[in-house]
Image 1 (tube, helix red, strand yellow):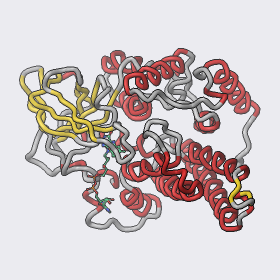
Image 2 (cartoon, rainbow, N blue to C red; image 1 turned 90 degrees about the horizontal axis):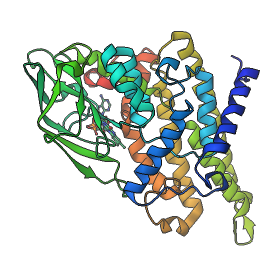
Image 3 (cartoon, rainbow, N blue to C red; image 1 turned 90 degrees about the vertical axis):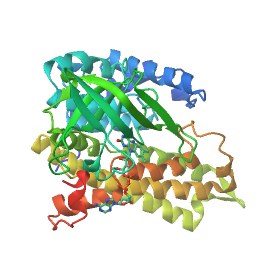
Image 4 (cartoon, helix red, strand yellow; image 1 turned 180 degrees about the vertical axis):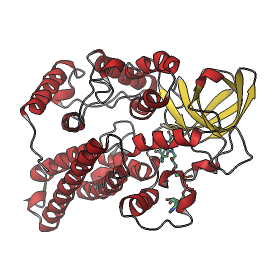
Amino acid sequence: MDFSYTDAQEAFRRELRAWLEENVPGGWLDGDRKLPDDEDERIRFLTNWQRILAEDDWAGIHWPEEYGGRGASLIEQTIYREEMARINAPPQINVIGINLIGPTLIELGTEEQKRRFVPNILSAEEIWCQGYSEPEAGSDVASLTTRAERDGDEWQLNGQKIWTSYAHVADWCFLVARTDSSGTKHEGLTAFLVDMDQEGISTEPIRQANDDRSFNQVYFDDAVTTSNMVVGEVDEGWDVVMALSAYEHGMTSIYSIEQRYEKLLEYCRTETRGGTRLIEKPHIRQQLADFDARIQAAKVSHYRNVSKQREMGSPGPEGSMDLVVSDELRKDLLNFAVNVRGPAAALWENGHEGFDETSGYIRSYGSWIAAGTGDIQRNIIGERVLGLPKDIKSETSHRSE
Ligand SMILES: Cc1cc2nc3c(=O)[nH]c(=O)nc-3n(C[C@H](O)[C@H](O)[C@H](O)COP(=O)(O)OP(=O)(O)OC[C@H]3O[C@@H](n4cnc5c(N)ncnc54)[C@H](O)[C@@H]3O)c2cc1C
């Protein structure tokens, strides 16, 4: 394996850096990185930022060029993530659309669905949410009970979803519902595209421990969608669930973790306690060195997974390794950062700043769960990477198959 970048890849990095210097919102590169506290303003800010990215094809670089992406190689995607983390760029609001829904529609959607929906994902004109989890169906999503019943050309939807990120701002939902109960639980599921702007759908926020309002309960009460909004085949939605999950597990956050580490390192270099710089205190120094080693190891492991993905042509189970490593690293690092800050860590004012350690530490518990819990990712690694036998419980989990 050769980890050095080619001239073309370095040129790609320079082009992106130059673009960011011109286009990142005012003051951001000088350290003024606070997102607006007011929720409406924040949504407007993030939507506008994604629109700016999309205008110059920087919103979904991994997408094919014909859909507004750059057909970027996996190495270019890695460079992109490094650069975005380096400047702590504002997040993209349509993160679910870009990373999960768009690629799934490009792979499995009808031509009509691609034409209708795909262009509006990158530009954030339509924001998406993912309606999989239910109160009794999380890791084991095949147990879901939200029903879809056909009525001529329409489908009527009834049931409840939970933990649905962005549902309160979403225009469309990628929903999995039960269309036939006669077979095993993995049979009789269907994936639908559902317009969120209708009477039969209501959302109720669930606030996270850091006061973020990022996910919701969603109720479907005689909501409606149409037959041309079915993704894949009726009753064969399990294949669609699996395709989307592979994209979900392929996301890594190791670069933003490294960026947080750099910030903490800088703090320890400059801050003193009892006349001694923090970085000179042996227990802090040793911990920092340990985190540095873990981050470098995680990056090398990610590069190896990226190389394999490039060979295979599609995301494999190795993405679960990146998820487990980065989720645990993030939690440990932020826990350490909160301790290093000491009492000052308790002074965080709100949960929307997004970059402070305390809020991040609290949120890190949710990250461990969101794309399938660390336990589920370990099942995938055990069974599909290491070839260990399946245990009975994991056989029921959608994330493990
Ligand atoms: C921040 C956040 C955002 C989310 N966003 C979305 C979203 O946008 N859309 C959506 O559909 N869902 C979303 N979710 C839901 C998420 O996918 C589920 O919470 C997750 O799949 C776990 O399901 P559960 O909460 O029902 O826990 P359960 O599945 O009930 O798990 C409970 C515990 O049992 C363990 N466990 C379960 N099965 C096994 C097994 N086979 N082997 C070993 N251990 C097991 C789990 O690891 C966990 O510790 C989000 C969750 C979070 C925290």
